[in-house]
Structures are given as C-alpha cells and as structure tokens.
Image (cartoon, rainbow, N blue to C red):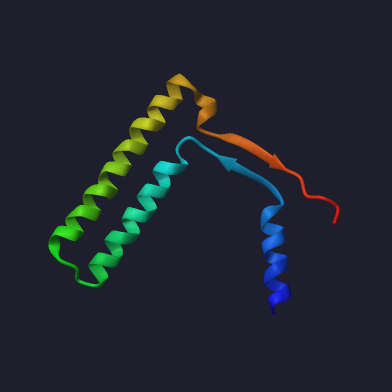
Amino acid sequence: MLKYFRSLLEHAKVGYSRTSALNPVQWIFVVSTAGLVGALSFQAPSWIIILFAVFASLSVLLFAFSYVFFMFRDPDAKVRKVFTFKDGD
C-alpha cells in the first residue's frame, strides 16, 4: 500500500505546473471559504462567521481587480509555465 502511494506522489511531481500571479489570492479565497463553511457547520459565534464572510468577499474583489489589472498591464503574469524534468532514476 505504501509503495502505491509513493508511486502516486512521484507521478504528481513529474510534468509541468502553472503558476500565476493570482494563485495567492485564490488560496486566500479557499482558506477563508473553508473557514466560513467550518464556522457555519460548527455554529460559531456570529462575529466569526462575519469575519470569514468579509475575508471571502474581499478576496473575490481582490481577485477581480487583479485579473483586470494584469489583463491590461502584463497578460503573461496571469499564467507562467514552469517545466520540470525528472532524472532517469
């Protein structure tokens, strides 16, 4: 079983990944939305729910602004391709 997971992890490293100037904003949205869902499911105090909702909303606005900004200023910053090569181990 461990060998199976190890081979899956090795295959995940191979190939190419896309990085973007917008990835950090997307992660902020994911984390704040997960916090909001968690707060709602555990019936957290209302100030915590409002806090996560505000963070999620601000991250959506920041993403929209950044997308439009990079669309006009530096379109290549939205998608940067990084190629990695694996040794022939």
